[in-house]
Structure formats: structure tokens, C-alpha cells
Image 1 (cartoon, rainbow, N blue to C red):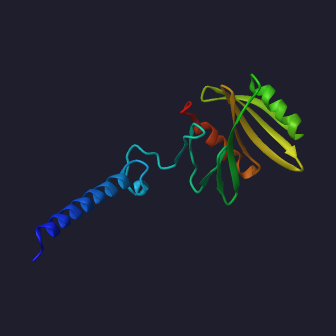
Image 2: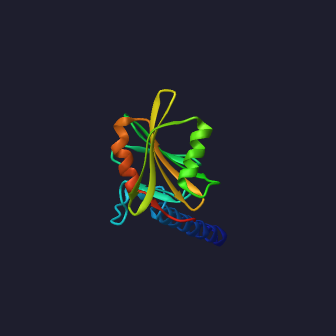
Image 3: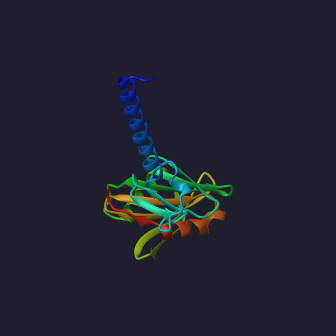
Length: 172
């Protein structure tokens, strides 16, 4: 027969375990929890990727995986990779920023044009360095430049789809 002290200790232990269990269940199934991807969510876009650090979201095409870094994101599959970087700029406009990159990195532009995508201006370039052609989309927001690029010609259409899905989230 258990003493009153042991019964009290057992009751407290059971209450602690129940509270701990409820905490684990609620945090696991809440937004960002370890099981959140397993739950159906009508409002969640399956292929949407959000980088709070870089303040943007995109739609990731099927059969691509994302790899997040401090200053950028890489979307890749067996055909190649698309990179998205954000960098600060000392320039007041996208043309000056890109010309500065061109000089600094000794790039040769094969093509350069401007295009309005979703109401925003992008500078689109194809540059060659060491026999590698890279297609890039540049968008300036405040004093930051977002750069979307790939060296895989097979991914040019996918690159444009990613750019079209880009949403700036503002400074967090």
C-alpha cells in the first residue's frame, strides 16, 4: 500500500506527463511544427517556398528541391540549378548596379533587355564568363537587388516561371 506522500508524488508526476504530452502534441501540429507537412491544409500552397530572412516567397516547380543559404536560395533538379540571391546596392538604379557587377566581375553581356513582370521592372541579361553563359533577372527593391539566375539553358523557361511567382514580403 502506497503512503500519502507516494500517492501525491505519483499524481504530480502524472499531471506533469499529461501537460508535457499536450505541449508536444500542440507544438508538433501547429504552424512550423515537426509534423506540419503531414497535415492537410487547404490554404497552404504545396510548392510555395518562403524565405523570411530574404523577405520573399516563390512557387517551386515540381521535381525541384530547395536549398536555403544565408544570402540566397538554390532550386535544383537533375538538369541544373536556379539561384536567387539578394544583395545590397550602393547604386540608385538597376542599370548602374548591373554595370558595376559587369566591370567588377569582368562579364560580357550577350543580351540585355528590360521587361515588366507582374507590374515590376526587371533587367534581364545573358552574360558569358569563361565560356559559361548565365541568364539572369535583376530586380531592385529599395537598396537591395534580387538576382535570379541559371547557367542551364534547359531551365530558362523555369527561371522565368520562378521570377513570375516572386513575391516581395517587405522587411520583416
